Length: 111
Length: 115
Image (cartoon, rainbow over all chains, first blue to last red; front, side, top):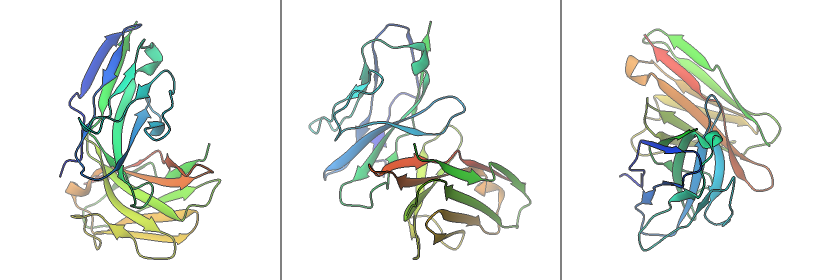
């Protein structure tokens, strides 16, 4: 069953424009949500997690349990934000690190 | 940050042979590692949880006899694709938890091509 949905495979914006990468999940319990990023020719790395409520590199994401969403947002996109972004879910109480990923969204920020 | 290394990064083999992929945590100990599979332009699919000193836990639909996982030490997990066939061709990625925060660190991935 598809647990994490990222509806956009590709997303392009111009530098300085706001960007939102969508993520919806299906899970009846209490999930833990993450955003991972993969820059060109680099390995996957953690961007942020919902329990931290942090802003990393200007990105934020709020868990909306009513809409079962965890959209990633940045008010002013930069060229260096161009990368593949994956939303991931972990079941609270399961082995920490057991993640289920969405298919990813390729973000391109044009100059 | 912590580093997870995979070897080989690329491997090509003939159909019917077995291939071993290693995943090492270079500067930390990892009692738990995870193996993922990624098809072209698709998501990472969790295959199994590798537990040091015990049997791996496989996700539903993953053949444990096909994908043998061994986690014999705190820094090494291996994935062996047995009797590989062209449909096993894929990008295999491992991850391990490390550091004070228990953050998940990913390897660079291993691309398997079965001819």
